[in-house]
Image 1: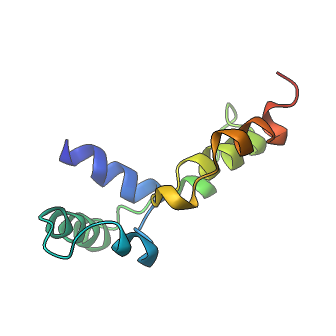
Image 2: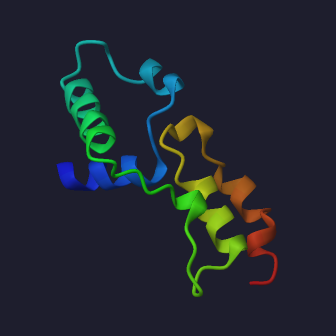
Length: 91
């Protein structure tokens, strides 16, 4: 759904320029991504997760979540890399 993408962009976006290599230029999703990003900018809806503060959210948790939530899938760690992440050492 569109509202999920708006939330994802507002917390983890905007989409990096590298993402433009993934979709064909004629893809209809570009219009929505652009509209969603403009809506977030116009309405000051940016809520960067990397700056989130909550007593239930440890800094290590926030760092790990930011690693796995990169908008360009090529920027995300592989499963093998995640298994070696310090966040999973004590589990």
